[in-house]
Length: 347
Image (cartoon, rainbow, N blue to C red; front, side):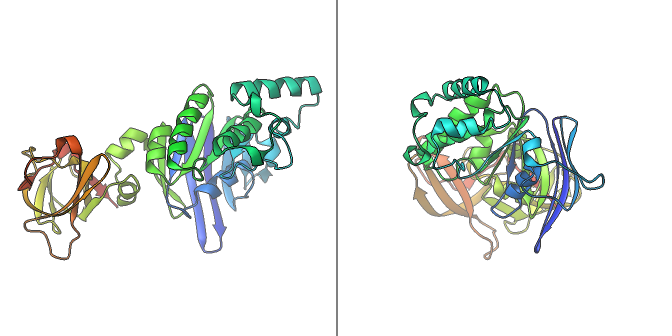
């Protein structure tokens, strides 16, 4: 087991209670701003000190409140990539990377390792430049070089793409994923961007109010988020309270419909969710009359708002999203949803 975290920390009125493990994998922590994602990383890196608990990495104890163990950051062998990259502005790219080798006393070895890192990250031609002359992508690679040159046992990425525009963000996500594919050690990235998390991470943990609610394989989490919070943060637009009425049946009062589900309904059901792209005019199951209320065109898709015929007047409209090439010639009078696409959400 690469990393074990079970910590608590009080910061004013906010309480962090983070418990999870990370193998040699790319683990994401997905949550809204202020939920405790960055604080969790800082506790692992030794920048913040938990009030109680334990952190162990590959069997080495980094922090243990009961045993009074609290290794300083430089002894944890944990690399931390900050949101703003935190490069030293008065130093060149090469000098910044050499700073990551502060413990190496052999000058020749330091220079050799710096050359290898510049080559690996394809920034050799930037070696003499200072951070102010770098683009966002170049700065990210330079900062990553300063971390990786020291060969950390764990890599922490704190919203690494948040300061970039959409086009550059996607390009750098692909570059970073390819670069780290052979890293062979644990990587934890915190983000509030569901698409970013889906592209980058093997597993995802959903965080809310200082607590990790669930950790699952990324595709598994999107297919079955389990909780309302996880459904919302993974992009589900249609969520309504529901109650169990059969082994594979639920009633949704707001929509005034009964839905057949693909999986058995457990006790404690709180709500159901239907992703906007799962509605289909040709689907025969869970098919009910609808009234389209409005449409909005996007570059490659249409978004429609509709109401079920018996829907409660106070209930919000339901969203339907579909690709332009499958736009029906006439406004449909009914829409259906496959039972496997009904998300069952529990408290």
